[in-house]
Image (cartoon, rainbow, N blue to C red):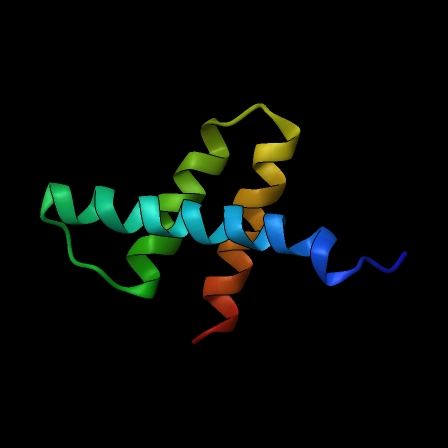
Length: 69
């Protein structure tokens, strides 16, 4: 299955929003901001999430961060 750029852009926008929200939450708490802390924060959200679509987006965000190292 191949998706067009128009189909995939909203997904990546949502993934970027999730990462941005995690950055703001960590900053607000005064925690150290790093790829590891972001990944850990998103992993905790993933563990608490039961919505399949949201879990997929969180997984994509985590993978994006892990692959950026």
